[in-house]
Length: 77
Image 1 (cartoon, rainbow, N blue to C red):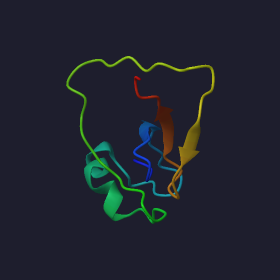
Image 2 (image 1 turned 90 degrees about the vertical axis):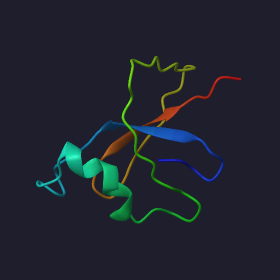
Image 3 (image 1 turned 120 degrees about the horizontal axis):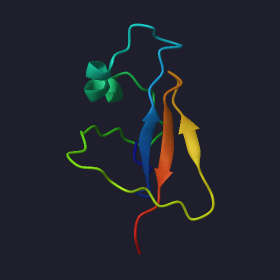
Image 4 (image 1 turned 180 degrees about the vertical axis):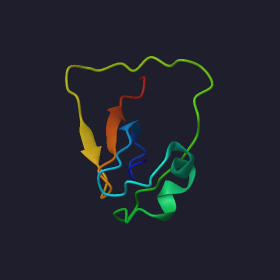
């Protein structure tokens, strides 16, 4: 998910608690199902190589209404 200020929150865990039929194949179109706050958007892509996530001492996570969990990604300066 991407916040209005372009802060990226990368999905860390997808959940089947609310929707037990949700699969990894459904994630590409998950944005069509989410009721995001104004200015937020959902983007989907598959990483083609490993990517290091750098945490600056504070971990920020959030969940959508399906209980999928997202990790705030700090953008390099």
